[in-house]
Length: 270
Image 1 (cartoon, rainbow, N blue to C red):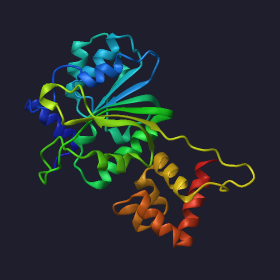
Image 2: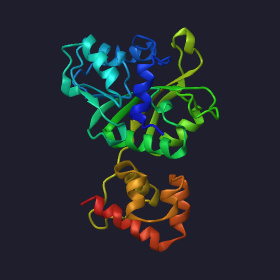
Image 3: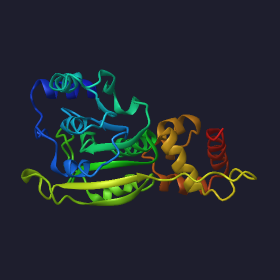
């Protein structure tokens, strides 16, 4: 089986890039046009040909970072924009990237992953971990039913499903059917604005006083991800189709496992 890097590079080599509209998408352009703080650190993961980044760059947003797993679209972008800083062109697996951003732009990147539950949980967790406090995740998600064909990327989904993955880590400021999609995508896109949830500080007299088990889990998932938590606390609910709700059910009736999770949380605060 090919790696994701090989898969997407082959798609570019074969010109199988039907998702590429050749310009900044109209919903994101409208959002960008109302931004005033040009010092924002902005990440566009899975950027492809990155017309959104090009638009922002030309409007004076100097801290735009473009991330893609394939070198081809990055090279094409640099050719179109020779003055763009090479250090802000990042060829890397999204899940291995480290950084802190004020704003992350979602251009149906979520829909590029094979729609297994673990992939979608990892996406939400990684997005939250890359955002600064009160940082925002903004952009587009495809709104059409999933199929059984796991090679037919990009994939769809529903607003209910997306909310299920994002709700534990983000406050939903808006999420609705796009009113200004291009003709070919009308009624097939959702536009969302999500704010990273605030983390309440622990009380000095008792580090766990007033902190719910749900909050502990949400913070650990946002900081470390499910895979790391499974390494540190070997329980099935962290390894197999992990979710906040299933983990809560198990931990509430399993004192020894809950104690290990609480200790991991306390260590994370040191």
